[in-house]
Every structure is written in C-alpha cells, then in structure tokens.
Length: 268
Image (cartoon, rainbow, N blue to C red; front, side, top):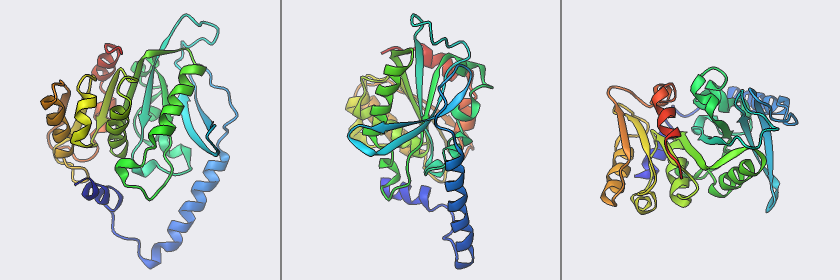
C-alpha cells in the first residue's frame, strides 16, 4: 500500500515526452544556478530566515541545507529565554538542491507574516532527490543530527520541539516521530501516512493530523489507518478531515491560529 502511494506522489503527472526533455534539462540547470546563488554564510538573526548548511561529522562530504527563522523578539544575549522549535518537513516537489523551493509551502513561506509563528524557532531542511520510496526519503539520522545542532546553537527549549510536515513530509513526520518519540513534544503530520507498527511508539505522543477526504494523491485512509492503530494501542491522536479538499490540506492547516495555540500547550 505504501508503494502505491509512492507511485501516485512521484508519478501523478504524465511521463515527460521527448519534446519536453530539453525543458527538464534546463530546469535542472536553473535549480543548480539558484542553489549557487544562495548565501549560506549569513549568521542567523532575529526576524530573518537565513540559509544554513550543517556538515555531518560521520559524513563529511554530505551536508544538510536548511532555512532557520529566529523570532523577531529573539535576543542572542538573553540566554534565560528559551524558545520552542518547529521542525518542518516539505513535500516531494521541494526536494533537491535549490533551497528556495522549500519556501513554497508551510511555515517557511509564512514566517515574518504570520504572527503565531513569532513564538517559534522555525527550522526547514531540504531533502535530497533519491530513488528511495517517498515514505523513506527523509533521512532520520540527518534530521536528528540537525535537531541536536539547533538545540546546541540556539536559545531553544528542549522540552518543546515540535515536528510537522506535508505530503512526503507527512510520511517523514510519522516515521521520525516513531523512531524518536521522546524527542518531540508534539507532531502534526499533514496528508501523509505511515505503518501500523509505529503505533506503539506513538501512543503517548500528542498528535494532531490533517487530511482532505478528496485527496487523490495520498488517500485519506493513509491517515485514518494510522489514527486507528494508535487509538487501538491506547493513544489519543486528534484528527481533522477537510470535506471536499484534495491533496492541499496544508494551506488551511498552517494558517490556522488554533494549531499553534495547541502546539504551545504541549510539553515533553
């Protein structure tokens, strides 16, 4: 079943015909040039979303690139104030090397304009393009290393680290939360899915999940099956289903002030 959803997410559009091959090639060149134009040398500052790279010690040739947003009231000299952290995982279409694509949807698009996000340090990494199934494309080891780095280098609250993602990032959210449930204070998977075997690990974790009932890319049952499995294990996940909504169930969700209010009520 997960493989079927993978095919729908990655192959929802018709195969590229021969007369479109040049367009695809030019698109890759454009993405590479855009990636080169991004300045990764800037120091994160309050009220700015800044591009950063984290070189992994065990994989020195590999780096995670990501956006980090520090709230407007964040003060580097004030170590007494601890800020909640939101880790956002994007969808399949934003994978690759052009970090600008990550700002297409969700928190990295809304920071600086949505008042509720001023209460969080927002971290938005980019997944590389791989041949792995969509539900395994987010590398848990890399993401955990990134969270550890953020907790060490910012005035962050280790008891209020929140995980969220959409589509491929929804799959990644379920998977990462199941792998390390004690790290996160809450998780918000949107139009994703997971495996019933995750339920035991997730049963004690505050979860609010969202999906459109007209989603033809990732069917609603991908979420309802997870919710049912967790409830059967003794958990109490929240579920919001949007009637008549297709795959884009994230725009309404991330613009909902109640989501951020609920998140801030959750502590590890």
